Image (cartoon, rainbow, N blue to C red):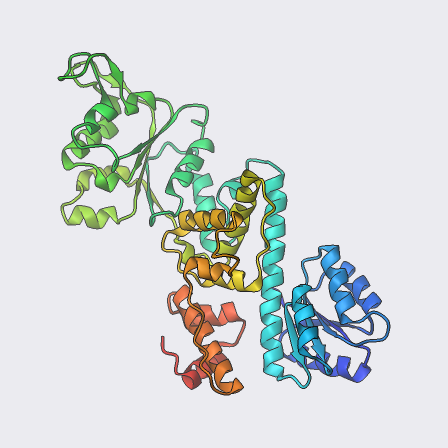
Length: 448
C-alpha cells in the first residue's frame, strides 16, 4: 500500500517544518503550503489524501480552504488545527465536512491516528468514485456484476473467467446472502452458453412429492392429476445452464435420480420410456459443506463427487474488508434512483457502522439496509448504527486518557473480530507496526 499523502498548510515556517519532519518519520508522504491559494493549486496537481491546515491564516483561512475543497468535489479529507479553537468553530467545521478538529497543543500520536483514519476514508472515497464511473459506463465487465476490491473477490472473479468457458459442473459454497445465484449467472453469461436458457431451481422450495415432476417433467396420465404433458427443468435448460440452488435440501431419493441425469446426460419424463439427450452445465449451490454432509450420510457421496469438478468458495462480507462500504454506496445509489430520491449522505459514524457491523445476512442484508437508509427508515434521523442495532462503545465516565484507552480497546477488539483474530492483519488494517500493536494490546488488556 502506498504511503498516505498529507498536505500541511500553515503560514508559520517553523510549524510547517516541524510537522513535516514528524509526519515523514511517522510514515507519511508530505508536502507543505504557506497559504490557502497555494494549497488549492497543490491539491489539484498532487491529489493528497488529507489536508492538515491551520484555521487562522492571513487572507483565506482554514475554513475557507475547507469549503473550497468541498465545492471542488475532490476526494480529500480536511483536518483543522487551531490555537484559538472554541465550540462554535468546531461545530461549524464539522458541519462543513471536516474530518477532525484538533486544538493546540495536540498529542502527536492523536494527530497521527487522525491522519491515518482520514487517509483511509479518502482512499475509500476514491474507490467509490471509481466504482461509480465504471458502473455509469454501462459496460458488462465482471467487476460491475461482482463488486469488490478485496483480494478474495479478485480471486473469485479470476476463477469465474477461467471456468466459464469450460463445460464443467461446479459447486458454489457460501453462507446465506453471499451472492451464489449472482455467481452462477455470471458463469452462464460469460460462457458460450450465454444465449441459451439459464434455469434456476430452489431445491428447498419444492415439496418432496413434486420435485421429480418439476425436474424431469411428465407425460399426460403419468400420475393422478397429470392432465397433460409437462416439460421438466432439465429438459427446459437443454443447451444452457441448470442451477440447483440449496442442493443440500434435495431428498435423498431425488438425489439418486439426479445423479443418473448428471452422469448420463439424459432425462426421461415421468410416464415415458424415451430418453432425451441433454447438453447443459450443472451449477449447484450450498450453504453447508457437502463433503461433510456426505460423510454424515445426509447427502449422497457419489452425487457430491460427480458435481465436484470445481468448487468456488464465496467469502462472507465480514472477510471482505472495505467492500462493505463500496457495496453500501452502490446499493444506496440504486435504491435512491429506484425511489426517486437523492441518496442520503453517509457521515463518518455511518461508515464506521458499516465497517464494524457483523452482517450475518451478508450482501442480502446489506442491500436491505441500504434500501431502508435510502427511504429514511433509519430511526427518525439517527445514525445508521442505530438502524443496524450496533451499540456504541462504553467509554466510561473517567478522565480523558481513560476514555481514549477505552475507545482504542474497542477499535482493536472490533478489528480482531473482523480479521479472524489475526494480529498481523489488524496491524496492517490500522497501519501500525505489529510490535506497537502487541504492546498496546498488552497495555489495554486486549486478548486474541
